[in-house]
Image (cartoon, rainbow, N blue to C red):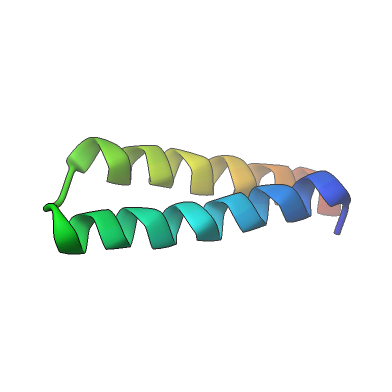
Length: 52
């Protein structure tokens, strides 16, 4: 796993924690979850391109 992929994975997990905490305290925001899904798809795409 390259450094940039590790950084994206850490960012993905950190964003999940932050969005979950935000949703638990303030309330759910669909745009935040949409942004997290886009980030997850980008991370998966980078991981797939690096493995092949």
